[in-house]
Amino acid sequence: MPWLLGLVLIPALLALLATVTPFGKRDEVESDLALKSQNALAAAGISGADVRMDGVVANVSGVPAGQIDAARGAVESVDGVWSASVAGGPAGDTAGTDSTGPNASSAPASSANPVPPAPGVPMKADLKDGSVVLSGAVPDEAARAALVASATQAAGGRPVVDQLTVTPGATLPLPAAELGKAVGILGTAPGDRGVSWDGDTVTLSGSVPTEQDKAAAEQAATAMAGGAKIDNKLTVAAPPVDKAAVQQQINALIAAQPITFQPNSATLTPAGENTVQQIAPLLKGVSIEVGGHIADAPGNDSVDGQQLSDQRAATVQSRLAQLGVAADRITAKGYGSTKPVAPNNTAAGQAANRRVEIVVL
Image (cartoon, rainbow, N blue to C red; front, side):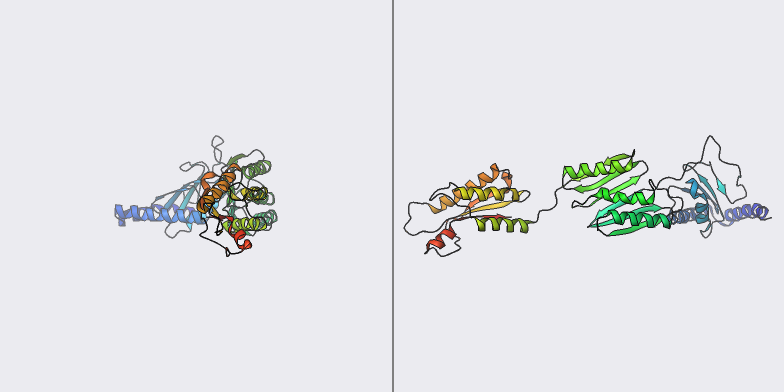
């Protein structure tokens, strides 16, 4: 009878191990077998279990109820392990023990210590560089296919990267076809972020451009998750400003209507005021230099060109600050007539040289 043979062989093996292996060496062998057994469990998708070796017999605890057979098979596949005694429940708990060894009990788990159900496996959908990455464990290939298909439909045209693993016994918080719709919680705003569903908690992480985007993500998660707790860890961070695009917009406005002043003064004309008002909303999140320039008009000694260019730059700086541009992001500088853009010997050239430039830094 095989079990009787086991009763004879296992003690013999343990005795042999104790006889021929020095105490320190035996500890080293047991540690090596325990480590290999832990690696085998991890490869099988079984986490949280504890392995303790008694010679060549592995005592495994903390295995989810639905994965006891898989855990036993994984450990007994390790070269050098004779048999595995596997227990469900928290590590160290013997309730639900299942073993192939001679001391295995066929008695069911006590009703006072029921075997817990297989735990839910965290599912994640992360938006990274414009792609949606799915990760976590699903119980079978059918669930995997249904989740990927649903996520692809909810991704709004963004590519879906499948990093899911199939782990028998894994549980999902929703049917796979419904769970894939969680991708929609990520929204369409720029930025990297993710949604993770672990048991009864849905966690939102990453960044969004506005408080409205943050609130919308939480609202979408609440609607989908039912009674699950929503842990909203999203941060509000405006996306990087495209400085080149802002500069092009500023240049286009000034080309259409230059920032002009009353003759020989730092008082804006109505047209100049209108241009400044159109430019102000473009300057959020950027630092600028306002440069004042005048024409070197021969014979006009009544005007201090350097002083006038300083004053005109300062006028535009002050007006932009009044319109809501952060004052510490504006530098004003007068250049006098040192940087002409046209000859000063014509009226048109002088008009071109009398200008205010706004440069994005």
